[in-house]
Length: 158
Image (tube, one colour):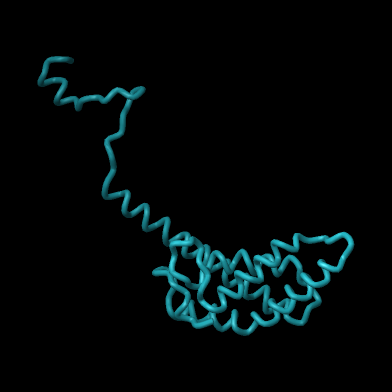
């Protein structure tokens, strides 16, 4: 994966590079784990995992690695933090804690979780800032719009 493929105005180049380094270091192991589990589950009389879901995860992770992953069909291909987070969580679910790369995979999912949370906070803050500038009139007293005291006094309605 190329670090610049992480496209978000809330992700710095440094954060992007850290994720890319972690991803590149552990992607081959995650791919191997998925291949092994999928093959074993296909041969099992009673599969214990959803093989089709793991095949989708493997395909999407390949797209993430190539920078062609699309959250929506109209999107431009890129590396998706939220997509990668959910995909790596699926790998964690089928990885033995004793696997030699388990620590690296868990560190990657932790870094993705932190980055996902910080971008969500930044988005929320941006929304709140935008909304603060355009506050619509609020109905009061059961939906009736009340006039200001000065309006009521001037018209003699008080």
